Image (cartoon, rainbow, N blue to C red; front, top):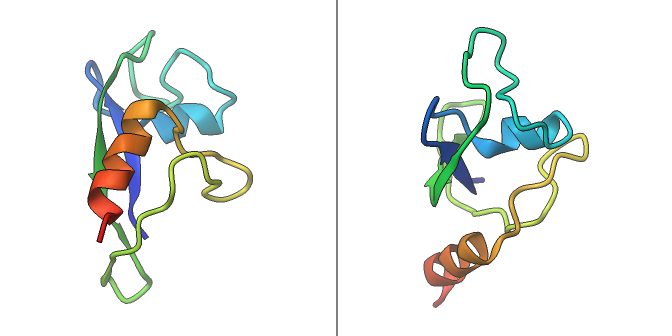
Length: 87
């Protein structure tokens, strides 16, 4: 599956890493020096299966990834999802 997320404009790490750590403002990556993540515009991030093949289905914004980690459900993410999945 693919997902829509915001990459930080400072460090480039995706917002779902921060959401996984209880929405902390600091980037949770151990080596990252970004003290305050600043989300950029939403974009699709591809994901791959165990065989390395791209998975085309896009997770709906606000749905849970794994272990209770939600994807961003903001209006911009929802609008991009609608644009990409409209038949």
